[in-house]
Image 1 (cartoon, chains in turn yellow, orange, purple):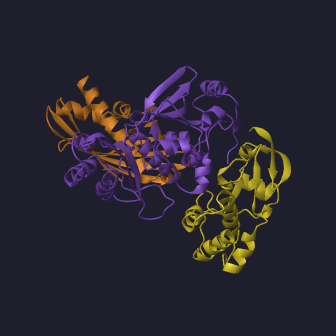
Image 2 (cartoon, rainbow over the protein chains, first blue to last red; image 1 turned 90 degrees about the vertical axis):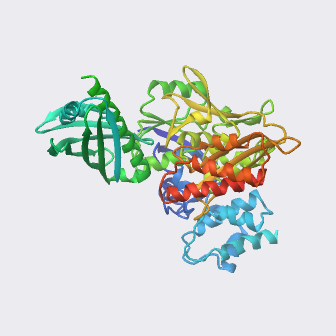
Image 3 (cartoon, chains in turn blue, green, yellow; image 1 turned 180 degrees about the vertical axis):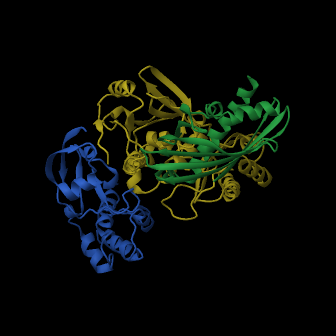
Length: 150
Length: 147
Length: 283
């Protein structure tokens, strides 16, 4: 019923749109802004496919209303320019790719917050990003590799 | 889901039975009930109940399916729906009175939850059903005592 | 999702006025992690959602006179990282760090967590063991609610319509008090606890217990203080026998819900096991 003008940055670029109150961030990103890298998996914030960064913090875009990003910096997988992406290729960090966007966005947020994250901290942080294909070791190896290269 | 409740009423068995068989009267003893009116051989009404953060308005009917006054047993059938949430509740209540001033009333309820309401989860629903029935038993005791 | 009206006041008094005008059809939103799911399932259909995110004073975390005040809009992540929280009790910081996943911790808040009142949640258990008091305000005034009076039933608090949680206050801990939080997760690590135990113990120079608090999560329809167990430790040394007795009393005080995380018998047994482990750690 109510509509709201929201202004935020998406991957460094200013966005100025009007949205209905019930618009979810994941739908705004995918349908209104064409950023389909962020996926909608479980829709209840558990699987991690919809992970985005909000002011640097990883969050589930499926649990956020678009109005909650007004004034914030949002980063999606499209906005990552990170050695993580090469590392995932080299270390077998993905197969089908459905969880990969979320894994990368979460891992990028981790290494920004804790550049010296221990292996245990990597596992704990990435715990919320589920993967059905790889068995996880390729993912954590890739993240550790980037950490060690810094 | 099966639930059991017992309550002892300090009143003659005949009185307890009479109140139980008076459905419009007994229905008003269910906490959260409103708009109770006789319909055919039963009653129609709405039960407002909160299950966690979710408010349900269960509209439906209660009727006596069978009774045996000598044995002091009866079976009530309740069918209610919440059209907004999309779901239904069906309950069979077997009641049994024994003793005579004091009279013991035993309620054995079998509740089935259909549709969306089931999403709230069995533990939560069982808890709320339990509370409603406990309230009913207490109110019944007070109603009988007051007659 | 059904359309609704969304409103995000900048000031607390504005928020309270809006809520007072229509408390039955207005839902308060903190982080939104629970509310958005309920709205997606169409199980709640508010006319209006009142967002608190612009009210900065509700985020404050800070030491008070020997104690601690935690703002209702502080996220679990911020609370886990807070030096003030860690200084008060490392186990409290660890409790906030144990909630769900990093994404939930960055979005979900202390106030939302308390108002949701799921007995398997982490923060209420440790906060209970630390003698936490919730402060709530409505248009008509402020109220202090000891946490054991806040949780009334499964998903039900004693908050009145029109009340918003402002903060939780923790009193100064007895000198030398040790605290721990143990979360039993037999299945997946991102879940709510099957059972959890928070224990706070202080002993005098001769090792005799002078302060005991034991709180249990997942053990009843509300987070529970195991008061018989606490009393059994008063004036006693925390030797094997005392710890076992207290653990048995704690288990006996539980009335767990049978669900996918465990049968009530299993949860009761585990409550005893994990109370014993918690007490050994802080004895």
